Image (tube, rainbow, N blue to C red):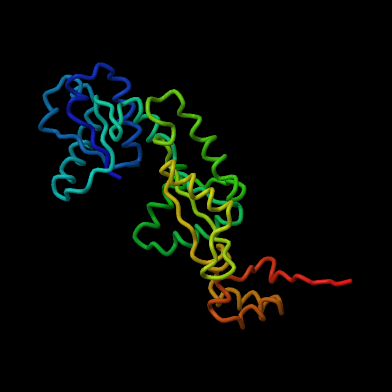
Length: 260
């Protein structure tokens, strides 16, 4: 992520402690990439109060951006608008971890860890972010409780000028709970989707029924063999489409009709 700090912060901002804190937070263990136009700020008194080692790091980031010309993700400036952050907003926003919100973090975290291993180039960085607490897994306690969970997080930003949800840093992963490919979402899930869209929360709904349906057949086969599990052996005989929407935990729902 690339964050640009506008030159005006060093020319007109009168709160050095806050600005320096933001710089320390952003660059600690190279958590973020930053861009500051050195040519614009090098003669500013505020810039020259910064520790020399930090100045060298800022210049390193500057040279990197000049060479690579990466897209800026966020801007920090004196002017507050719907997209830019002020220094005080930025301190609150960038200090919080990115949260992947799951329906059940205890079980679903294994799925996330397995996914991370498949991103060869990014997995090292993602692992570092998890170890540092910059990326966390949140437990919503089911799809129908996700809106409540997000509202509880949003309430922490009630004293900031933008709408609370503008400061959220989260990504939601939802089971589709579909029993067949064209099945419409159940009403509870649809209500959650509508809430996430309204509050501009990024989310993804699994194409298959739930996370368990993404376990490779080879893994299921090993478990069935090692534990002599006839249920799993029967599951492996299903066709690919049936496997995608089969409830591995509960099996088929059997409904009996009685008559008098």
